[in-house]
Image (cartoon, rainbow, N blue to C red):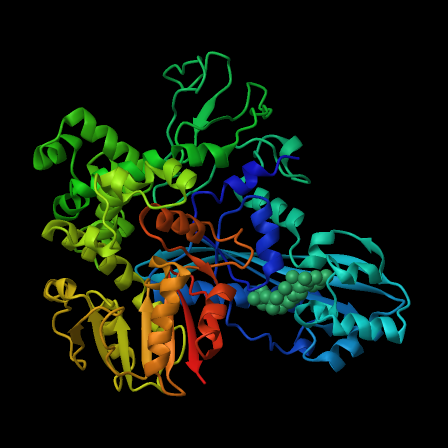
Length: 631
Ligand SMILES: O=c1[nH]cc([C@@H]2O[C@H](COP(=O)(O)OP(=O)(O)OP(=O)(O)O)[C@@H](O)[C@H]2O)c(=O)[nH]1
């Protein structure tokens, strides 16, 4: 059984796991799935007696968890995911459904019920495929459940309480974790072990196989998949916005003739056109209609090898403002765009084809046109334009990243190698010239604007009457905050050279209270008074010593009840899951003395300055939010 081709179907999709369960995250990460985690806010309160069988309850709960996230992301983030996965695990014994214990007594009741008996563990799973059509969310729901039978030994009172006091039962269905200490209570397991842990991986892969590899109609041999197919047919598969798929050349020496027939006799079809990787050729069927097995393809590694090519294609198309031209005049042929932007026709055609294959453009006989995402994110004045950050990535981060090897060897920033001079002060690099400063501000504005709503609504901030956004740059977050909390007055505090250049970025025609801009250096000058201090993408710029300086300064002016709101990419505590944030930490290595930190690292830093009740929200967007209060 080869798992990769099935999970490979999800490679080019935005996959969201609608679950806070670290076990589910680990199970899916371990098999190489790349996904965002957006915990569901759906409360597990469905009326159990309304369901004929316990598994129906688990499936419905899983479905509601996933739907809540799909809807929230669609409405709140304007970032409709492609696939949302939800799951719910329950234990049933003596016709009773057990979920997570609410306290130790509850855990005791559950575990003493399970003692010496066989029980069932059901996990319901929902896989929701999402599409945004005319701004409405359309969903296709696939659900299933898996049952595993588990028998416990007889448990003595002493053992029970020792186990409960370990703390392990509290966040686990039925009050035990089979993967850890709870494994010692188990006499046997019949069925999928991972199902008990919280996610039936095998059944999940089979479901994906059913969805993505519908059996060939004319071949009874393949009507039903009892195992996950080891070849990749890509039939009936849509991998994003563009659905066309092309015949192409085999990677090896064999060439296709005009019928798409390879010289070896097998028919080859390329991966769907919008997938990130190109040239992945897979056999369909030989003349007898029997699937021929493909050579194993390390698709994840190939994707990573090609990643820089895809990034650079995006950067160049953005830099040449091709998305702007296409929005204004598309569909356009390559020759027309080449004329507009002053580039070669052959080079432009290849770039546009690559962008279309990457799902950024649509290619039709009329020419190339923008996808909805390109209009929203890639045009220079799109509603959530990332153009500023893309140009910053091309002009500033790319040269720095070419020196990653030196950064890793030396453990320090590489600005001197990339740009030929060494500035002691990080921001002097950015503010050395008007052009670089504006590019940097546009980049920061892109991310701040894209994430502002999620950061502003991650917590209820209505108890705060005044806020000061330290290093708040163009005020994108400040403007969002005053819209959401009309009673809040927000001051943006940033370096004089930044404040002098903010006017270009101000929203027009807003009827909300204005945002005030004050210039100063938060390390050197007095901080404006406020109930809430905001540090968005600030602490990650600095090493711990500087973070302490800043936090102690804030703590000194904070009265009890005042708070700090951090917006950062939060790493998981083990630093092994959140690849975007971990790559961002490398990004900090090549250009700053700072780093990304985990939730517990932030908590520790904040608590040392008297900020407690530290709450962390993973928003599902690029920045997460942390709120704490001075006690
Ligand atoms: O042996 C084990 N059994 C169960 C678990 C963990 O228990 C929970 C089950 O709870 P639920 O399905 O409601 O999921 P949550 O953790 O609340 O996360 P959601 O955000 O998805 O609701 C689950 O975490 C299992 O992993 C275990 O660890 N071992």
